[in-house]
Image 1 (cartoon, helix red, strand yellow):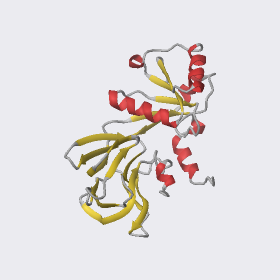
Image 2: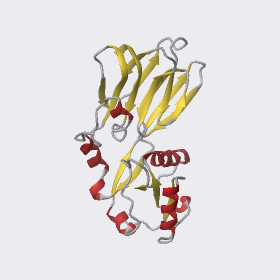
Image 3: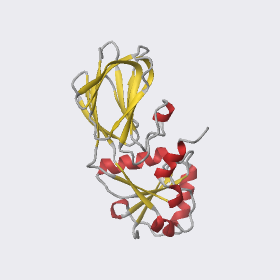
Image 4: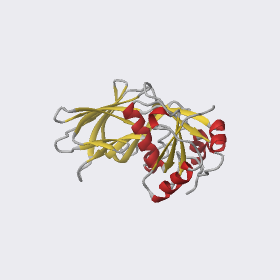
Length: 258
């Protein structure tokens, strides 16, 4: 696809800022609101921030990231030359965020979206007690653990993988439901559910065992219950070089030994 109006954004790190200055000399750039593609320079954290900014501002512009961070799972290789040719050949991936509808003990209601995962985490030294329902049916009357998370395929290689959750193929149509340091049921590590599922989590005894809910980096404390669904009304578009496509990266992570 041909892109005519490029916008440039960069992480505040010195490395990303220096790369941005280099690119500014090579190509013509447009304001973000006039662009038909965004070039993002930084790491995975900056990419997540960029995608959340698009969600918050109701923008539906594809993003092509170049890695000036550490891991760069969501980014392409940093190469300033031949950028326009790379954009024409890039493969587009559409991802949908999770929607977290949360209610606090005081009755406050909040909606957050997450690209990687929604996590329920204990706030104190005491383990959390949760009731888990899927599509209106209680599947776990009581989970005793440090917490639990729901991860998308794109986020399955992040916190979910660190918590021994499964890596989900990009086109699997599934979500990972992964426990964090479970105590009871002692052998329950998690589940995989269709991405059309409605997942409800109710905190048991929230006054004694308070929990927070985190949608990517956005946290809400003293939670009573949350409902998590896949939000198909807010698509996000990422562009990758053909030899570094997101689905291939996710698949290859299953065979990494370190």
